Amino acid sequence: MPKAKLTTKGAIDALPPPTKAQEHWWCTSLRGFGVVVGAKSKTFVVQRDVKGKSRRVAIGRYGDITLDQARKQAEQLMGKMRGGIDPTGERKAAAANNMTLREALEKYERYLVAKERSPRTGAGYRADLQRYCSDWLDRPMAEITRTAANARHHLIGEKHGKSAANATMRALSAIWRRIGREYPALDATPTVNVDFYPATRRTAVIPYAQLPEWWTGVHQIQNPIRRDLYIWFLFTGTRREESASLRWSQVDLDAGLVHFPITKTEPFTLPLSDFLLDLLRGRRSCETTLAQFGANCEFVFPAWTRAGKIGHVSEPKLNEKEVALFPCDWTPHTLRHTFVSIAENKVSIPATHGRLLVNHALPKSGDAHAGYNHPDFDDLKRSQQLVTNALKAAIWKFSYPQLPL
Image 1 (cartoon, rainbow, N blue to C red):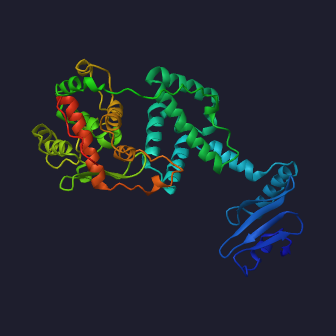
Image 2 (image 1 turned 90 degrees about the vertical axis):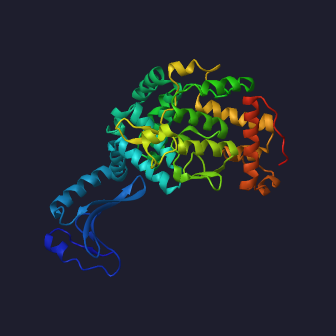
Image 3 (image 1 turned 45 degrees about the vertical axis):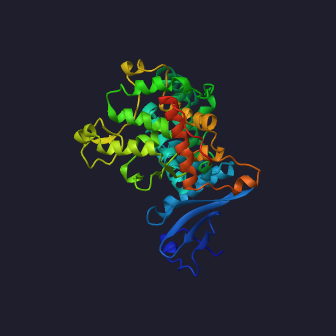
């Protein structure tokens, strides 16, 4: 590498254009100080060993800083490097610790896009942090301490429930660990000081014998949109967020299907039974819905937002009077459990069909034969109809044919 006495502005100006992409010139009077000459710019750098490893640090562009400023900074940096401090790591640590949680969240969302992960993951994390940690979003990550994380977890648990508390801290941990991969000097995630509440698997279902009472109760709900949404949950087993936000553009009544392009797992197409087709046709022609939202409303289950705009049902919860209409407590996820239980125990459709109908990931298996089974749309539609028949049989107490698959 060429050397020169880089002590005057004239010496810097006289450095020739590079014969390749870049040329490194090193100062003969200040060891380790140099200039990287590119096609359009010159950059001051300093280089020396730190703990046996060579480290090069950019000081700044010539023109943005002067030669005197660059030499002074070089001497300061080399002093640190002689003491075993790596300025590169120091700068990365400062950048990481000064990064706000909002900036880290945005970085994490870009990572999800690059990895082609479901947008719902990032949206869920953003929603949890905005709902329960909004005061942290514009705070540097270094200020979010282990003690603060532990206290916030307890606060969320007491006010909003243990599941919400765990989910929020999991979101914080996932974002923190991903940023830590880019900035190794970032302190460990503060959630190491969080004692997560024990996970409780949701196993509640509507008992088979109580489905007629459930049906009677749901038909006493005055709001026809939420009433149809609850029935849709029971007869499809779909996830709450994915169905509540359903648009008519996803529905093809002629083909008898609904397509979900964005889900918790993979995009999937749901086959519709005769009952589900009738339910959607009824939604389309519901006079109450048309009067409220108009014929051009894009949502199947519309609702007014707080801002006074047309959106979709976001929290399909029962009010106190409606809760009293039912023989047991339930949530939309209870209806998903009920659908799966009916499919597996009352109809005995193939396990693969049951998983695909509710968009569960197929289990990884060492069984080579399982990998050869690819049910098509018509196969799944027959199974969907069988589950519908079984639900109708339970609700209206008539027998249903056990059709061959």
